[in-house]
Length: 382
View 1 (cartoon, rainbow, N blue to C red):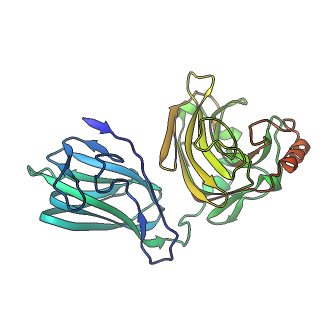
View 2: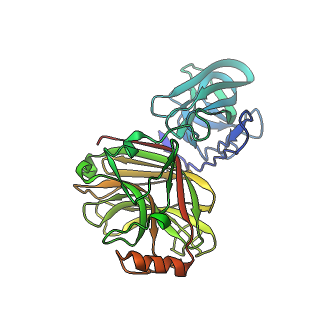
View 3: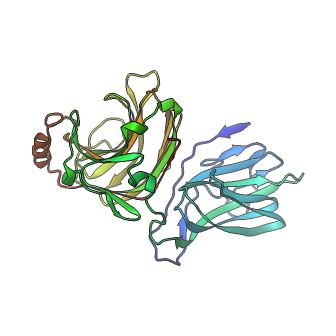
């Protein structure tokens, strides 16, 4: 029976010079806290036969296995290692064609490892499993380490041309966000772009009207590393699915406000809540999913998947997932939609009136709103 344990993961990719190992912390890597952080499939169990600490993982036969999802950088070399005893295998699977494993058959505790290079995804599964023998196998002290730099230096991937070539996406805001081959910079305080019913200034890419399609017929995925540079008290939308009218099906916010039931929820203290709002298929109201917090100058990775209306947002090792309402002409947008609101969520200015927004941002002290995207990927069935 498959038991889904809590996937509370902590990923720490240290900013070290090229050539120095960078550790990715696998939560509960030695199984000292049972299966916390792992998904297990019986016959997997916690054992007192250990290499270090008080516990280890024991798998007594097939189809026993465990896995854990971790965040990684694209196009980067990593080494996965563990201490093992018995016959089995460890490995990684990015569920997009990259599958690397290391089989072993040892009678004493032995450290084994396998080096690999990630591809286009920024998450992968670390797994351990039985090797179809009749004997018990033990696992302890997993470790995942970045041992090489990104191909192409820095972010490791160019901005996909499907975003910038004008065939699928169009730009809102008269300033090209493509500052180099690997970076997009969105600055609504510079573009000051306003729509007729808008509640602030925009600088965004959105699917062109001619390419929009039914939400329940669309499959697409998007991911990017976001660097946030914002004035205290600011609030912006960085990704959304929009309906054919003024309704929205999904929104991801960054906000230093007092909206309730978030992680920080304290206004204008320099701590920005990152959260998603999803509108369920039969819901008139949105469901709020807190994801994490960030300060100006810091970065985080966000991913979005839309599988025919089932939308999944992942950031800070948390996941928001819901089947949203259908719409015959839905479309995806991302960038920086700076909201003309005070830090308590009150609207400021008149919708569609750019001059009123300018007065509001000046009064509120909002002088910085810059979102930089790297490691950007997008694919769809458009």
